[in-house]
Image (cartoon, rainbow, N blue to C red; front, side):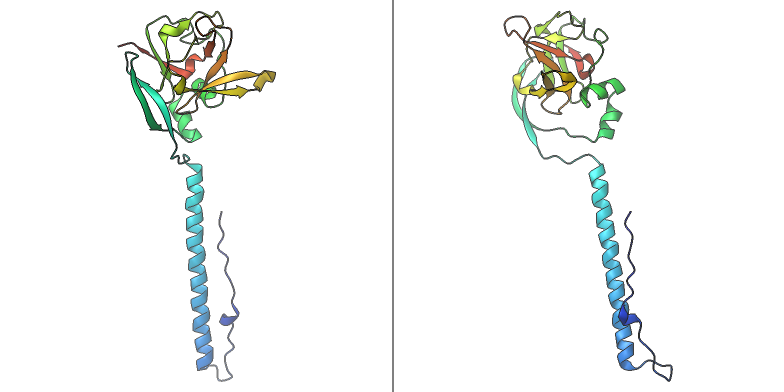
Length: 215
């Protein structure tokens, strides 16, 4: 990818005198020319090496020093307070290795699972729904309800701090997408046709969630 350029310097083309033996000045200039050539060559090699390392770094997981605030919850669903944690950023290849093909398509590419195909659409067990990518607590089963849509639905997240709402204009529609605050995983969408007390329906993808029975 990086090509070392050999420079032909005028100093190296020193003409020998008639007796076939270079004089002192010619010898000195020849030595200086070779030294300059070696210096330029070594500099180019070092530059190539540094550039190669920088290129490799850009192809790995992007470094992140960002922090976000989330509310932590125990396995019983009890709040353990608000904490500052490192935002999780991974290379695409790492997400592909960690997740199933469907979970990757939904959480990292904003896809949607087929209605009524998800594991949790009809799950009535008591527990906490966490992010499949980073295990952040997202929903409590106490707020889950039957929406008839074929996707697990909740009337509120376990904490507003743990999710992010953003505008989504895909598929020629205006919707509000919901993602995990810590790792940016796409979870689903929120609509204003839910039950009381919020009137909201957080329509989630099962493959974006991990259900943990309440301890």
